[in-house]
Image (cartoon, rainbow, N blue to C red):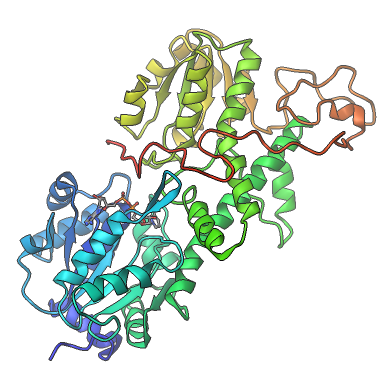
Length: 522
Ligand SMILES: NC(=O)c1ccc[n+]([C@@H]2O[C@H](COP(=O)([O-])OP(=O)(O)OC[C@H]3O[C@@H](n4cnc5c(N)ncnc54)[C@H](O)[C@@H]3O)[C@@H](O)[C@H]2O)c1
């Protein structure tokens, strides 16, 4: 008679996990899977990591987790030395004794050629169902379109003659983590969202997560509600970043300091204006709107706001590249140092980074870009484009006609004008898309910060109440000469939609990123 995981309560689960009576199996040891492994190892459980990539398995077996992810390698190391952790490419290699297992699925789900790619998750679900014993639990962690968990689990269970929620428990619990703080995000920062395919699965998921989620557990009424929750979180971010980008472009065209305005606006509890920048990257936020799109189209709803937001965010690299072209009077053979490949500051993750689109925009204009990142050592996409990636700032800046700060790495914050001049050997134009640099350190540098409130290359702001003596330059192509319109520019005709950008057709046909979840070599 198999152990009834839904009936033994949190104390029973805790006891069995710590004694190895229940084992944890994790399919996919990427950023998410290794963080889940670390959390359960830290809890004292016995964990088997399964990843198809032999290199990932080799590193995990040596106690090495993803770079820049605190607490993971330590947890792997402790688990290995205590005989509680192993990593394998095929579950059968683990040689684990029979007995109940909780199987987490943390493999990629991506978007390619206009469709959601579920292949990895289908494979993992099939394997988990195949190797499961009666009484096991499968917990899907990957972000998926609404309806996916039920469909895949039912199909895989049916193919091996098992009944979900009866023979095998099936839960969905989205992962709510950010790179660089994944373990503590799970353990401390946010409530765990859980759901089950039936009442037994839902109860088990609640009991299980109550053991590790200090911020509590939110049990949702269905798998579909939990799947939607994760997608909505991501779409909310994407739409709000697009709004910030749009507002910042308006502020910029008026020579206004967007950060000043944002701070003031956000002092009111209903305003949560986000930070503008080069665009949106990472394995999640740029993808989830397409999951919503798939669900919405199926439901007969046109997700107009979501798609417009995606289009605005995708247009940002082109916006900055064309500014640079105007400002330098052409980019042919100009050397441009792009600072930052990672999609976010202080992470070593370049998946779907908007830096790629910026580099493509520069290449299209004949420029010679070189990319610097302090945390990323190799990148296959840049290699394919014959663009050099370096960790050496001096090499990147040497001879630069222009410098574009693309990522808010803290390594760039303290850069001074003297350093930039010395390393470049000239006085390059510096375009800061994320307002990382401190203008007070950059005396004498031709600095342009996105919506920075300073028009360093142009006229000073006109005195109050007087018209601008000369037209403001068009950065960006906005209302044109706002001062002459007494701050109330009215479009002459219907405002044009943002120019369509690469890979973002309407309706969308595919992603802008090269391949599913491209990996960055570290
Ligand atoms: N990265 C994030 O910050 C984040 C946050 C929340 C949710 N998610 C979601 O979690 C999922 C995983 O993301 P990630 O960042 O860990 O991806 P990742 O690409 O870093 O890692 C996925 C791993 O799964 C392995 N894999 C693929 N198919 C497999 C299979 N059938 N069996 C075993 N291993 C397999 C790959 O080799 C890879 O190492 C995605 O669906 C993503 O949407 C990611």
